[in-house]
Picture (cartoon, one colour):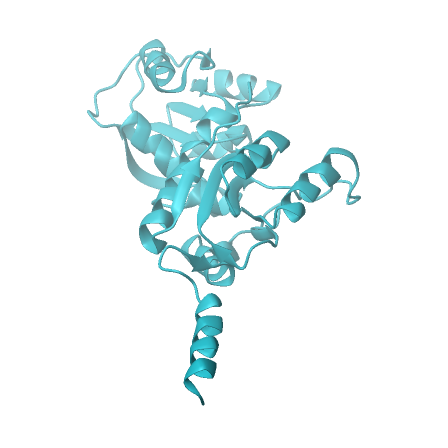
Length: 272
């Protein structure tokens, strides 16, 4: 091969290789599937790559929900990949690509942006998961897990000293803001605490069966108040969205450190 041809060949070949600050989309997809152990979950949403974009990933924007605001913010941030907890596709949803759904997808496709979404796997992961991050934020010591796919963690405050329900709620408010609500209070102080981020009310009975004296979650349904009240369990909500910000953020930081890519968390707030 002549020198000029050799040079052109190498330049063309190099153009198809990931740069030092990039990872291939497919390699990232495989890594995330293994790291989050996606195969062990029966979920109501597809976990992994939901919309295919750029073959190379240089910048990841993480967020809670794949809404129009987050997609626009990611475009402004010149990201080629978005990673969220709540994606675009859910079991039982209208499958038609119309209205706001069409708009979100068209934004992604027009800018060649990948969309990854991880629902239950990102709740449950022992290192970067939403439940693990809530424990880290509140200083809770994890002593075990229960419920479907171990989605409920239980333990105690780091000090191990029993506290009044109102004090525990105030402590949560210090970390999660004024959306924290104390719905029921147990008789006496609480020591054993269980928690599940997001809409964890459906797992309240698992927490009760595990002997929890208090249950912290993102949001509940009306009947959960009666179950907690009649079970003498303190029930605290901190907001669905607020309880699930730390998982995507931490996962993005993990990927940035491992693959030397850029990660930025963008919070598009929700009052729930």
